[in-house]
Length: 403
Image (tube, rainbow, N blue to C red; front, side, top):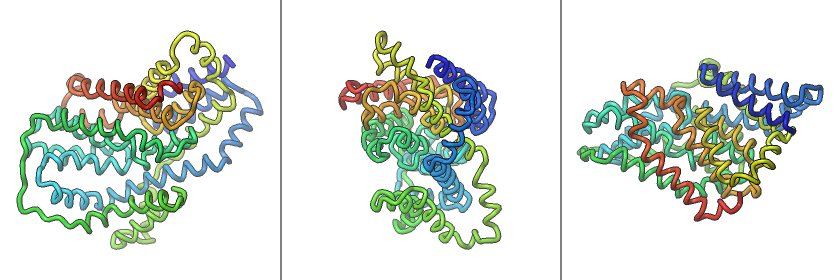
């Protein structure tokens, strides 16, 4: 047992070091899996585990879902559809302050690596019209891009938390809604506070156009929620519908090149590596020694939230933090329920959100020409508010008594 625990800890150190060295996460997690297996069970049985996990439907399904969500996000950007959505939103909100929050929020619905750099020039332009300083622009671009991640059913982190815990994706999202409300309020207070409204006139808005642009996302979620159709099918339908919407741009002759642009081996390796890591941890019961030794000394709730925050900060990538953190920490929790999983996921999300190796922070800070000290000086108050809010919600909802 202790050998397995040491393997988990060393694998985490290797993973964090590789990420810090800017090695792609997909490659990093596969190397970490190799280290974990070598230290936990270097035998034919261990190799057989890899074979078993690779053939599990859950593994194949997750790889498909993660890559299709990424490809859908690519299509939104590549087709210009997301820009058409923003154009319509400018008609919805005469107050330009609402536009500057909507731009990163819309892009946040379509997860894509480095997406913060796509919205930064738009925030820069809108911010100049509102006379917003660079620090506020950075905060707005970063905060509202991640506003949905605690409740959005197509968030890869939330999907992984649900898959690894067996708790319904939508139940976790509903449970997290009060914290989403705190995020929204915090964004308006620390992002828009002190900014005078600028009202645009003679703006036109066609609700049918806006709904049309959102339809692929509505289809993916609607078919799953209403009819219970698996995501790996509803996402295919959504992608096909989007290709039809933009049939003047996409055809069979250029589809191979678009697939090459929109998909990556790193993403495939990431999803596969997460499932391997989870499967090996489960088979070795590597966290069991920690459970027995910690229960007599420190409240498990504190252990879980501190370690969850550390994993989020250490990894700086939400799908990875959730994909690894949930299976590692679940054995510490006496009752696996929507409340305990919801709180666990929220602290993993918070650690990721604040991580200094979080790609969106790095790209946004660099674009707007400020330093990390200025950035963290501005965000520490909403960050502390989120820590307090999640902790209070754990008490109010009764989650703390289930750990």
